[in-house]
Length: 152
Image 1: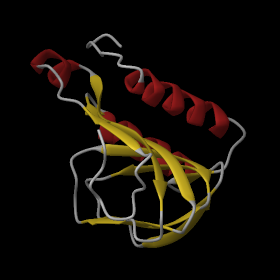
Image 2: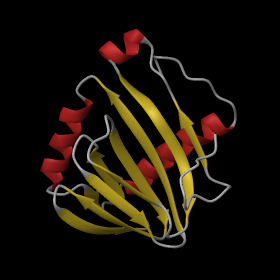
Image 3: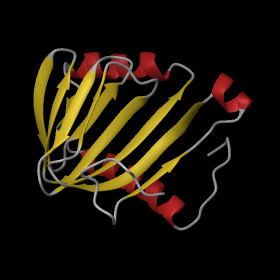
């Protein structure tokens, strides 16, 4: 699927998912994932959104405002936010990032616990590349026509 948001370049990809009733009740599940290439026209500002978001920045920079604090994230950084809270992010020209939105059993509580333990929604750690690879592989699976089931 192609995004219609301003500032998302044409070679970007995104995928949306609707969980089964069983998955929604009992499991964590994907709601969106994608690989975006952006201009500085891309931004997102929401008071609330029902999902948790993980972003891995492959190149460039992004401004983020979350829970009253501002962050500049860049290549190799991971951002984890509970989108139930007000949030804003804006691309700088040349931004490339991967993302997943997810929800389900205890997703918001787990996200908040991880953010609290890190004292920040921004992660700058050696294992960030592993997170980026997992999201990249996920998006590539769907680009190649993969179909998901509740156990994945």
